[in-house]
Image (cartoon, rainbow, N blue to C red; front, side, top):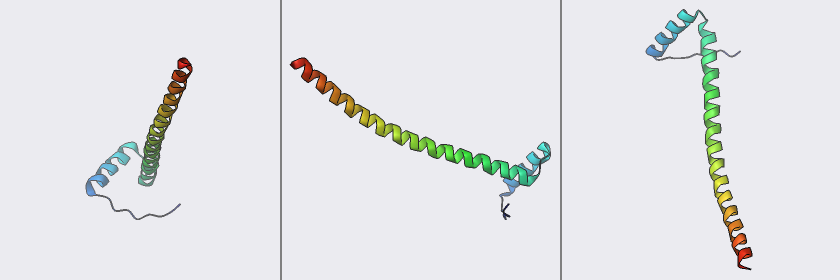
Length: 79
């Protein structure tokens, strides 16, 4: 484990204290769980952006391929 010095806004600290008192869990455990959750959220957000970009690229590629197929079909029908 790593030791971390942390400065919190008073409102965030007070809200955290109320939650850990109600849940009866250690502050350290609560903060670890919160950071773990937030890290997973950030990873998913990054993946979502990457998937959206990949999807846009595949749409462009797919449109080009469909246009080429359409042109080939039209050439075949003309013959």
